[in-house]
Length: 100
Image (cartoon, rainbow, N blue to C red; front, side, top):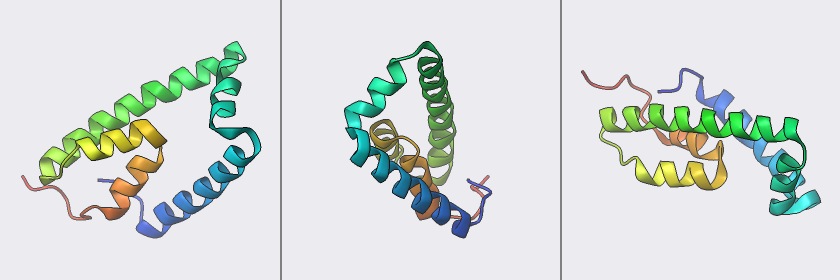
């Protein structure tokens, strides 16, 4: 489970959510991807984020399995909206260590 306190997670979710809403309002959803694929350096950052998301999904899968939580809604949410999926998973999850 995430070692960060819930107030920190809420703050990250709020600030990142507001920033994301601003960016989407400015360039649109497609504009985000066009920018990420428009330059080789930006594409490298996008690929790095995809790798990081895969690693994070592996950790969420292990945590969800250990806690008896269903993994697939969180995986789909993460694939659809990125970091918001794990942030919400941690905010709504059990803060106790997994059994065993």
